[in-house]
Length: 590
Image (tube, rainbow, N blue to C red; front, side):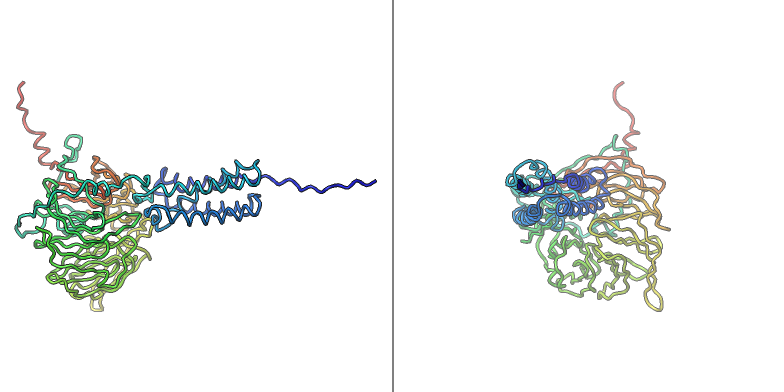
């Protein structure tokens, strides 16, 4: 008798989990671990994380051994969950990282959650296993609507907070506005002590000042400290008045404060708000002073000319509308340049000139690429001209009518920092991409019977400024090689040294004593010797709390610093005063 056998399905092979665990762990380490251990390698960590994410998807679809309905269903659920999450997260998360921040953070977390759910559900019934994976994915997405970011650092790290916590700007607004401003009495029409962005020559050089470098004996003395609205503006100073730009809620503000006390004097408000998640809210440019007037450009393109004593408006224009230029991704960042009877601003990669007295448009320069640099006055081959870096190129135009004199193209990308001049008149330019600096190039510009010629002398990757300006001193350039300080010689562009982690900060040069005054991204002050022999930090002092990208200003012995949360003034002991104090006779009773 033949016994019939009932065919039984073969047992399902267990999930192959280890490749998913490796890919998920690699994503987390590449996204977050690299930035902690070695911040300068963050861009490479992002590349590794992207490839690890792709490997994770390939593992789940083709090598996980999960049933095909689960493989496809999980991918569909992840896509739908991410799209839904992006609609409900805080605007700073939704727009952060050029719109990619939610994916940067959510995908590694969701990968880990999926692996954990798959491991936990191996011995569960099909329905419970699927419910576990669905719950893990939704739970991973559910964290992100609870967060907001205060922006990113130069390395790309996000400043994460719970969504319901107040921002520094919200705390400032809740505290109420300052007491009613008192218009300043008219001052003599003399040159400003610090007329605007990076000083008189826009080179961050403070001449005729020497300071005490032993801060253990004579540390900076805090004169005052004030909360301030967000913005990356620096200061302009004349007499006892300090001018800067900030954001206060829905108003973009030009502010005037007392240098001696920090008390408010007046505020001019424009009902506009610029917000970009990486850099945050607020204006990017710095006021310019001349002849009792304040010239400003806001992040949306508003150009104001105000009375320096009262803030009264002489005239106002919108450079974006006048030039037909869209607001760039990080906002307009130009600081106005005054030349004779013109005020010149950069609307991204296009220059626009206005009549100083009336505000009537005088000319527009040729269109360039994306740029966040300011117009820079230089005299080359005896010819005054305006330089502008934009789109990885430098262009020179005639101040009178904006006619293009010469240009030189380098790398395609954004341009942020100012050009500089070598001792013989050669021009130093920089280029960058969205994740960091590319390098410095020296070009020789000449003018002859045949017109203008431009020749590349060298290109160096040994100094890579991103949005941090560099200075030139005695045949060398000193600046930020991304997050570290570096020195290169100007003969060949060779690196002399690299040292000191100051993040993406800013600096001043005190040439009379060969000294760099550094303001770090974390708000610390440091003194560094401006010598090519070696990196030497002489002193360090905590000045501000929070991310600090603003340029410091030194007027006499008063140092002004600010960021997007607070500003402060410090008195620095002069070298002569400190020496005299230490040499003073001891008159105490013995």
